[in-house]
Length: 300
Image (cartoon, rainbow, N blue to C red):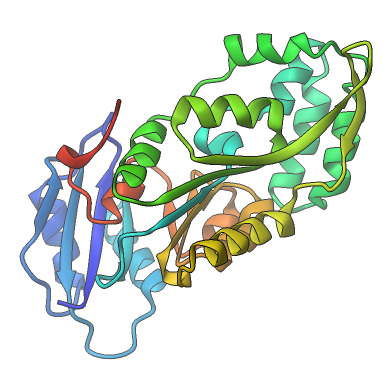
C-alpha cells in the first residue's frame, strides 16, 4: 500500500470505532486492513490510489462522510511520513492562549488588543504593523508582569509535551517559532522540551519597564518561513522531512514550505490552505499522523 488515511479522535472524547473505519474504507481505493494506533483514538487505513491523488480533497471527502463524528483525517503517502524537523507556532498552538492578549487583560485592555490579534491571525490585516500597534499599548508596564502572566494564565496545549519529546526521542530537531515574545518562548520551550526557540524581543528600559517597542527585526510571516528553511538547510534535510504546525495567517508561509503543514484548530483561511487540519484532536494527532502508536509516546 502506497498511501494511508489516518483517522484521529480527541483522546478526551474517544469516539473512533470500527463503524467509522468501515465508512472510511468504502471511500478509499483498494483499502487494506485497518491498523489501530490507539483504541478508539487513532487508526491507519492503508490504500493504493488508482491514479493521481488529491490528498486534501480525499481527506475532505472522508471528513464529510464521517460527520457529525468529531474525527480528523490526514491523508498522505506512506513513504517518509516520519519527520526529522518540527517547527511549531506558540500562541494558540503549543499554548492555549495569545500571550499579548493576556498581558493586555492584566491592565484592562484585552478587548482592544484581542480584536487586533484576531484580525491579524485571520489575515485581514498585516501581522507586523498589528504587532507594533499592540506592543505600543503595553508601554510602561513592568517586566515582572510577564512572570505573573506565565504563572497564572498560560497553559500548555494537551499533547504538546508528547509531540515534542517523542519526536526528539526519535532523532528529530524541534524549534518553537513565534510572532510573540522571547520572554514567553524561552519559558514555554523549556517547559515543553524544544531544542530551541525564536521570537520577538521586547525592548526594556533601564527602569525594567516595557518601552512599547520591539527590537528589530520583527518575527512575522516571512521570518517564520525563513526559520524553517534555515533549520532545514543546516540539518541537510529534504522538504519532505519537515513538519510545521500553526493556527494563524502568519504561519501560512512556513506551513506551505513544509513537507507536512498542519493547521491546528486554525483560522478558516489557514485550515483551507494546509496539507492537513486538526480540528478536534490534541497535538498528539501529529504523532499519529506520523504512524506512532500510543505506547511510543514520550510524556515525561
